[in-house]
Length: 334
Image (cartoon, rainbow, N blue to C red; front, top):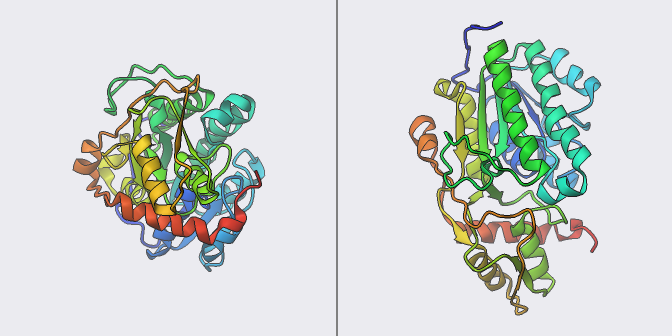
């Protein structure tokens, strides 16, 4: 119904909330932040494909939480979560992660990240939810020279980036055609407690795992490669603000720290924290990774949402290290 009046919630209190991927690294931080609020219920769809049951017991044992251990491509699960239960807000975080995985498994990536997003949107439409927040990625910028949300010149190198951008187009279609109140968030490199190392996981947990094992830290590309690493609680903060602020309707926001660090400097910090003497090794850039430097332009997010990321990278790395040490028994076997 085009022209439907947006009915954005200004507060989450007493709201019925659904999070897809609510037990992953970002999802669990978001779930915990929401459970500190006076929400009515929190329904989580998460099949533990990117998370550890042991690390999220506090969430699933909360009396307000309903955990559905299924994939988002399951129609039965989505019917149960959205048509058989009242939901006010949907945070769609579930995804098949990330670039190398999408190269190795392009069909699965398309099923989860494109078809899965279409299904969640369609069931959310049928349920007449009041707010839909979509977790996209900074990778949709591809090799664009600007990380302003108004950028339209996309040259993408992996199925993951393509399917994330397709998800944005689907969200915009549901906003324009059905009047759904939507917001798109482009997450930059989120890190922190909740993410275990693994073949398809992020550089920080993988560097820590290797350093804890006394192995060298391999860096692809040259010494100038840099990224914006954003602590997971900042990511959760920005995500909640996007649901609460009426101004966010129909908008796209970057969720990052607004700072960047070279991967070489990151590796040195992790070796220092862990006492790893194996050092750093340099390797050729991966064929799909043409991005040398990426830093979030968060000016719009700060101005419109009141986003205030906590910047204390060294302390946040220490907290991440302590969490990984506590969960080392769950590291994948190499």
